[in-house]
Amino acid sequence: MKNIINTSITITFGTKIRELRKSRGLSQESLADLAELDRSYIGGVERGDRNISLINIQKLSIALNVNIAEFFKELND
Amino acid sequence: MKNIINTSITITFGTKIRELRKSRGLSQESLADLAELDRSYIGGVERGDRNISLINIQKLSIALNVNIAEFFKELND
Image (cartoon, rainbow over all chains, first blue to last red; front, side, top):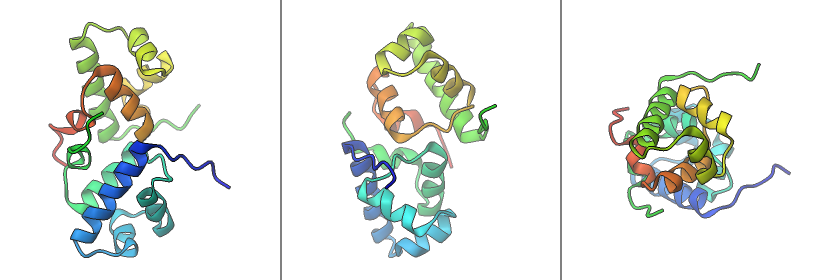
C-alpha cells in the first residue's frame, strides 16, 4: 500500500482541484486526459492522498487553464 | 546520478526561492534549517534541478513567511 500522505495542504489542494474541475464540467477521466496524467492519480490528488510534484501541479494548471497561484489563493499558511 | 528534472517551471520556481531567500538575508543553510529541509536539497531546488513536492513547497512558504501563491504570481502558464 503506497505510503498515503494525508496532510491539510494536500487535502486543501485536492479540494481546490475538484472544485475547479467540476466548475468546468470535467470528469476525472477528461481532466486526466487533458493533463496527461492517470485517472486514478487525479482521484488520489483530489482526496488529498498524493504529495503532488511541481511539474504535475503545472500540468493541472494548464489543463484547467488557471495560473498555479490560483490553486493557493485562499490558503493562509 | 539522480535523474535531474530541468524544466522551465522548476527553474522559474528555484529562481523565485533564491530571490526571496536573498531578500531576507538568509543563507541556503539557514533557509534549510527554517524549512527543516537539507541544505543540498535547497541548492538543487534553486538550480531548478528538483521537482519539488507540495509538502516541501509549503515548508518553504512557511520558512520564507509568504503564501504559496506568492511563488507563482509572476508565472504566466
